[in-house]
Amino acid sequence: MSKAVVVSQKNIAERIFYIRGHKVMLDRDLAQLYGVLTKNLNKAVTRNLDRFPEDFMFQLTREELENLKFHFGTSSWGGVRKLPRAFTEQGVAMLSSVLKSKRAAHVNIGIMRAFVGLRHILASHRELAGKLNELEKKYDARFRVVFEAIRRLVKEEEKPKAPIGFHP
Image (cartoon, rainbow, N blue to C red):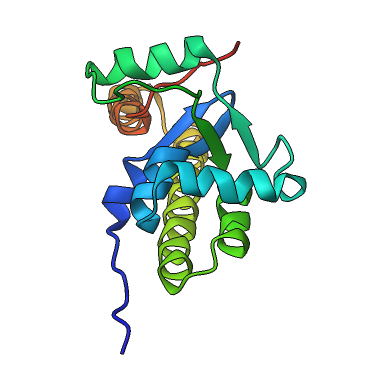
């Protein structure tokens, strides 16, 4: 009887980065989650490149890789010979058709849930901002301090934990 793989949403969310305007996961993180070697994950992708257009997967530039290393302040990247691949949500979904194991299917479910969870969080922040604007219009200036304090709290909450702004 096969045992279901449980991957925490927090563990997955910590591996989602914002690069080139996309939320992505790196090949090495995906390989670790799937329980395969990074080179084997990339071999499977290379054999099926037609399934991974640029909006599904792209290769990091040397500068983007250096920015990631700097962000983490670690040398755990070892001797990277090839630049890492970054997979968007659609690319991660496509991986399940390339990596045909039960573990890959279970891990993919967790990853998809993490991406959806991030979208819900962002949407709720936008919704809250809209409601605040409506309330501010409704009430007079006496409440301005309260609204500004709430906005500051929301902005602090929205700050991404992953490196952003990579635009080669």
